[in-house]
Image (cartoon, rainbow, N blue to C red; front, side, top):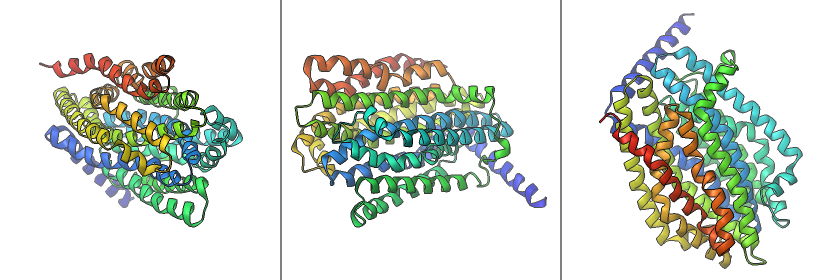
Length: 461
């Protein structure tokens, strides 16, 4: 009993200190303090796919394409994990800002256990329909065996991968990005060693890459779960699992923009695979799919930096919005948008200059893959600096639970603009239209977000 009382007092003290830090520290320093571990965490998360693509790329072009096709299912995992993570995490952030600690604990358990339950259902269904799943995602007959091999252990690990993303976002949004970073980083480092061991030493090929990712993600999940037990964190307790219409309504408010964004990423990835194969020259379908898959991983790694910056901003935004300190929200929003844009400009110039060399890192033996990948990467670099405004604006509206606007903004880049563009442009200029699609979609998304960004900058003046 005395131990429990002491623990509760320690938790209360930690929460008071965190509240003071989040609502009183200078916003620029605070955003950077929150952003550094989340940048590392997001970059490390992106490394899972980068590492697999690197090792598999030296097996064959078809193997690279098979892993690329499977990326659509990975985005589905992200969709569910981020839906429950952002939905419950944003609620937790504002609840802590309003000092409603009991509500935060109930939401943490509900979000985590719901994510794991849905992941279990998805895994069972996917394992029963493995080959149809590969074909649905755009795998051609010569790619299906490789995509099946990669999906096998990814499906087995789905419950842990989904709920790991939920835990990561819950920890981050309550201002504990350090614990989130440790869990993700440990899994990524382990993945590097396991990829080398299973693919090359044990000669398991694509299946080895899948097993390495599965084991690594499970390890990260366990570490994240331990992190919730640290003093001052919102603990996960089964007794606090309170599924109800209201709790899922609250999750929907905070998580729907992420769900829509990732669902559209999944759909657009499938369409990209299909259109790349359709418009590629005969006999180069696997090279085209693999090229787009490699570029997607390169750009995801770059985009993860911006997501990390934005996710460092989100707990600052959520706490201060919950505390009614709206000027601090505005100042942190402006700083985050400026910082993101500067980083994106530097990345875009660098990637455009070294595009062929970046593609060769993954698959130097296929000249057609390098040619297509170089063009795709350079097209995307043209409008990449614009996504800082649209991304941070979307995060701000999502964190402050303005669901409709956040959802509209989240659907632009990979949905509202991407899908019509990829259906129309190739009709006139063939494969080049597919290569240009993401750049056009990014520019149009920026134009959609710009009025909302201007409104926030001018708010309170």
